Amino acid sequence: MSHKYPGSNPAPPPPYGANGPSQPQPPPYQSVYPQLPPQSTSTQPQVSGYPHYPGMVAIPVAFPPAPPSYQPSPTYVTNHIYHGQPSSSNQPAPIEPEKVVEDIQWVSAFATIASHLTGKAFIGGHQADGSPLWVVRLKHRGSVFPGKFSVLTNMASAATGSKEVKLQDMEVLCAPMENLQWVPANHGNVPKNAVQGGKTMVGLPLYIGRARFQQTLTPGYVYPWKKCCCIGFGGRTVSLQSYEVLCRIK
Image (tube, rainbow, N blue to C red; front, side, top):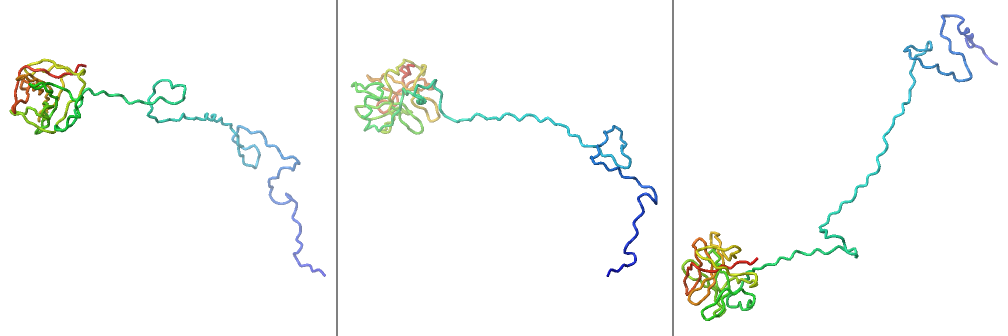
């Protein structure tokens, strides 16, 4: 058994637009989606009752082409020096060090055992009996004095100040005879290419010289500031105005 309550079946509403104020009508239904009207340059909407929204326009943008791939050339660090085209064997030519030829050498020695330098030591003079005298240099009180070494007595000596000093420690001049020559000079003059054999305690150069005295040809040194050649003889210093200076030939 069904019960009906008052107001359970309300009356249907009046037809649309029958009563009341007029309202905007919806567009008629079409089976095909309505086409948008063509856009107008006017700023006013074209359809009454609907706001106007301008459509989005796709603008093509041209992108620059991708740069070509850059491959930097490798960098190599090497200490190889180019010597021209390589040989047929793909091996680089060996690097040879530059050869330096020393025409003059000073060899440290002890006077009593210096016989091993025979044939290498430079002979600069002779004693009265004809025995050879080597060219040597001695260090004494901050100075280096060129002097002589007697093969007969195994004694090295040099003129220092007013007397001749005899020492055992010495340096022997070793050089080929063909690379050097004796050049005559006098009164402190020193020829070109003269060989410096020592120096004073204040740094003034002393050049290798020799002079004749009492039937000897004795090595010593030329002191340009004293305008003479100094040799050691008989325990004292002898100064001579005429002498010879050892010079390089080349």
